[in-house]
Image 1 (cartoon, rainbow, N blue to C red):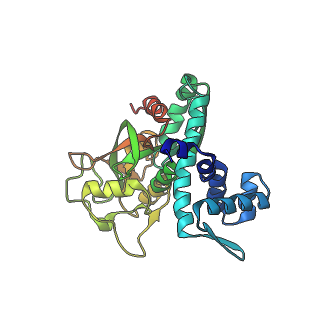
Image 2: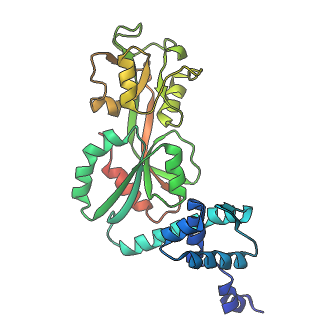
Image 3: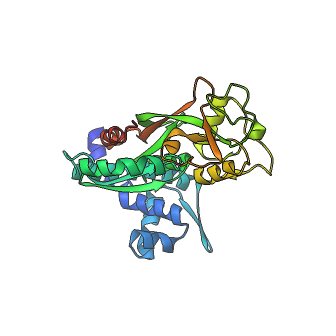
Length: 309
C-alpha cells in the first residue's frame, strides 16, 4: 500500500491516542487514584477508566497496575506520561497562542519565581508590567529552581525567573540582569569592617546558609571556592529573612543578594554588609522557558519588562 494512503486511512487514525486519553493518564499519574483523577478531569470514574483502557489497547501494553487503594505506573505508563506531558504542554501553547495572536502578553501567563528573587523584584516591577500589558493575567508560583524547571518542562508554567549558573538542558532564557552576592557579617565579628573581604578570610566553619535546594547557596559557595559546612548541628535557613535574623544574633556569616539588600532586608543594627573580594561574585537573573515553546517571544518581552536597574 502507498504510504500516503496508509497514513491517511481511518485505521491508522484510530491507532493514535487522543489528547483526552493522554490527559487522563497524566491526571492518573498525578493523583494516584482513578476517583481523584476523574474528579480532576470532571468526568465519571467509569469514563476515565474506559479512556485509560482504550489507551492501553492502542499502545498494546498496560500503563498502570491496578492494586487495592493505589495505582502504580508501569514502565510503559511512566514513559507515556513523560511524552504526554510534552504533547499536552505544546497543545496548550498552541491554544494560548491562537487566542492571543497579535496581542503579546495577554491572557493567562503562568510565571514561576525563585524565593531569593520574588519578594525583591516583583513588587517594584508588577505595577509597570500591568500598565504596559493591561490584558495580562499573571499567575505566580514561588518555588525552588529544580521544581520550577520541572514545571516548565511539564508545561505547568509558561516561564520562570531563575538565577544562573544552573544546568538546565532543554531550557532557553533571556537576561534580566546581574545581581551581586554580598557577605552578611554579625556586628563585632572578626570580619566586621569596611571594603571587600580579602580572599581566603571566609571560612566554612563561619558560615550559615540557606538549606539545600536554594541555588543562591550553591552559587555563593562556588564563587568563594569553599565547601558548605558539614554536620548535623549546622543551621540551615529556609528564607532570607530568617538568615538575616540568625546573622544579627551572631550565629555566623552568610550571603545575601544585592537586590535583597537594596530592598532593605539587611537594615539591621546587628548586620554589616561587605563585598566579597575585589572581583565580586554575581548571579545572572533570567527569564527561562521550555525550548520550543510558542510563548518564547512573550517570555523575552517579560524579561525586558523586568530588567534590573
